[in-house]
Image 1 (cartoon, rainbow, N blue to C red):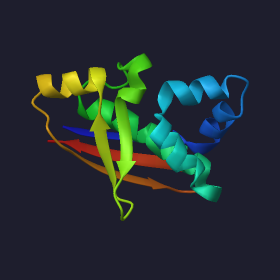
Image 2 (cartoon, rainbow, N blue to C red):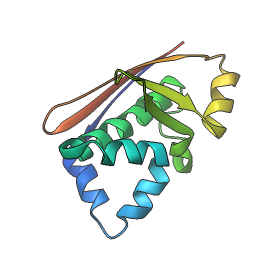
Image 3 (cartoon, rainbow, N blue to C red):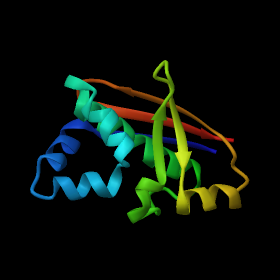
Length: 123
């Protein structure tokens, strides 16, 4: 199954910098994702938006869209030594993938100055 998503970077920046920004970050991103994105220098918001889009695209590839709701941290985006993104599932998302016989994902992330994109292929 295939999932695609696009996220407005300015919207993510506004959410992060809002009064409830800390709650948003903790609800959506794992500590490892936050560490990666905040260490990414001037591309912090682009990285956060790309990971948000990735979580949405993985959800779509799993056939549930954003139905994971409060469990977005059950989809984690990690990077290998060369920076290639990969998907690691936890909790509810892992159970769902097993139920659907999905054992692997291919993930591609990109962004312009305004929009972050993610494409996910579940196998």
